[in-house]
Image 1 (cartoon, rainbow, N blue to C red):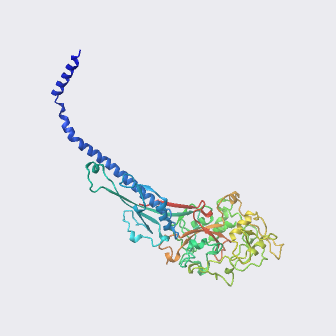
Image 2: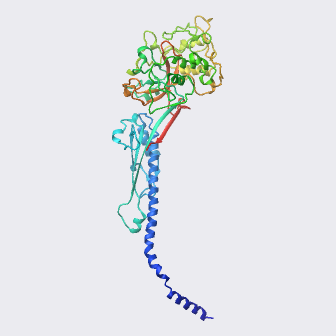
Image 3: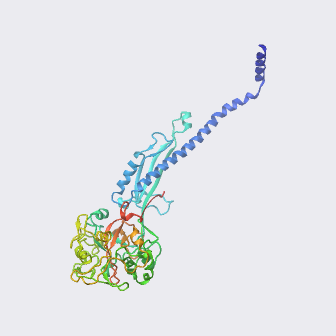
Length: 510
């Protein structure tokens, strides 16, 4: 029994000794290094692709983070630099060294424009923004990261390894929707105050603007009266429709707007539907909620629907015996002083008031027997800018005074007006529930000196410095064609005026 295992072992050795199949070991031994090399190359190729993907993703994220701050404010570049240096952390994978893309691993440059074609190379020196107000694009370049290959490690080679770099361009734009096709020139252009600081100053809130002038002073440039070309069409009818309807089906972009030339006839009929005045082609829409008036349309007019007439002279200081009184103009706009208002740039001379208006007479005429309003510790006065017209307007609504009838202080028996609409026959639900106040209009502010000279519509589109909200203080007069509105505030993220209308657009361009 003990001999059988030995016999089996001898037989096995004899078979192995006579077997010629072992010849495959030599070629296999020679082929294995080559196979392992190809495998390493495949892995290295995948690692190279992954490294490029992660570095490019980091460049994209940095470009978007910087671009999101480029809102044309004077501090936008400072905010963009802070965003990419402290708020964004990106990892690159498979590269040698620290995997984090740090502040020393990339550069950011800010451009005012891009080449017209994507195939054209970006000339940074030629396109670089001079200051933060011009910066529209962030050009990010991430330095090269080295890929230490598996092949090099296996072979112990210390020679050059692949370098992976990336670049990206992000841009910022802003769009305002439900927007009236209107523009004004920057009242601070050419002064030592920038627009954003100026408007945030309480001293500027409540100033009256003549958005559209009369006679020779009506034009901002030859052929331009303050109208923009609505994206929905090019005719005068399209402009009037965009002014009259509550939500025009288009948006205006900060990157550029087109000017609509010509003094459009009958545009007063479009503006005045907001004041419950339906005339001309808008006589047929008095039951349509899209053309509803404001919640309060107190404007200093008396008479029945269709035959309302102004009860006071808006160019003269009110005396208090008027049967009805609309929101008075700034005192410096009255006869004998017309346009002699201080602290405005040359571009807006004669168009911007000082905010001082006769609130006291307005209140005593329209709300006889009621105490003068006090809002935030400030009281209505006769020559003050403590309270703005918009504050008083909102106070009337909130205190349920819209239905109170006005009367002259010296003739209490005279029939005055209320703030309640008398011509609109449609559903009144939106007048109180819709956050869009129909006596508020938006306008684009342009740096008119910087984009000029403009003749007609040549040279556009023109960049918008900012979008602002105005409160319409009186209906537009058909004869003089003037539009009067009080400055409320900038339209920017976080403000009441930005809700439902402001859209920030941040995207990659390259």
